[in-house]
Image 1 (cartoon, one colour):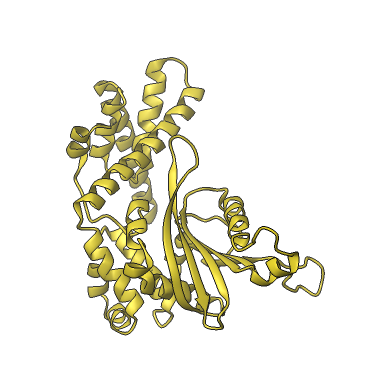
Image 2 (cartoon, rainbow, N blue to C red):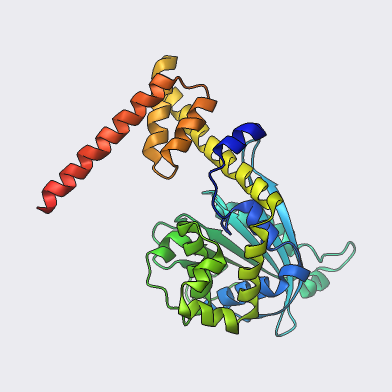
Amino acid sequence: MNEEQLDELDIRITPPPLADPVFSKLFQNAEVSGIAMKELLNATLEDSRNVPIGNIISLMPQSLHSDASERAYRTDVEAVTVNGEAVIMEVQLSRFASTIERTLLYSGQALATRARIGATLKDVIVEMPRVIMLNILDFDLRANGVNFHQVAKLTYREEPRERATDKFEIHNLELKKFRQTEPDLSKPLHCWLTAVCRAQDEKKSLKEVVDMDATLQEYYKSNPGFAQFIDRHDRVSAEPEVRRDYRRWEYEQMLNALEKRRIVAEGKAEGKTERDMEHALNAFKDGSIDPALVVKLLKIQGIPDETIAEAQKQVQAERSRQAKQRSDRER
């Protein structure tokens, strides 16, 4: 997509904190974001009764390419606990169903970071850091799980159910589950996730969200890491470069989603007209993208105007029919 098309589609809002380019800029390095990362990690660790982080040594955003059309980001964190134990943490925003397998792959690399050539196994084990993987997920990874904070550890299968090692664990924060709970803002992690989810859902800056809630304001005043996170998002989201990167990333996500639907439709329908109609219908049925934006994206993909108009008409008629049925049932 060229810049002219991007400008035409730019009806924009504040770039939300969990958009990949924004999140990586928020946690750019330890100097500008170290306190924020420390408090986010400690809010997560406190929620699972783990030893807190004492100091952040380094932060390093990494870009990950899963294939030619998809990319994601993670932030590598090197830290020390309050007990002086070395910890390597990977914080990533994941949209992939294979999140656990990816996490295992990254953790294996992290566990071996301090192994020196020629060192004995005993020395390697002594110097091996504890690796904690934090996945912030905007989908339900574990269908059978009830809690939004899912922790996976290596344990013995047979009784007694003991941990096999404390060197590795995964924390999954499932935001869809969190949104379905009544947040307890006396808990730090609930403050962090409430602010993030409201900013995402209401298309507001984190600062706006905090200013609208007295309890979040108090937490902002009392927790310097949370305050750094909120203030940094306010600055970062206003930077032209970040807004441009976010805009491009957002439309890449939309186009990728539409392309996947087109491929599915292509496998089901025969002939270009049928494929185009199936693709357009799926795009309008999605509901998460503004209809005017869907029209423009479909035109960019070469779908004829009459097909787009007919698909939109059919979807609107179906939604009206469903709304009438709901209204009739409620009488």
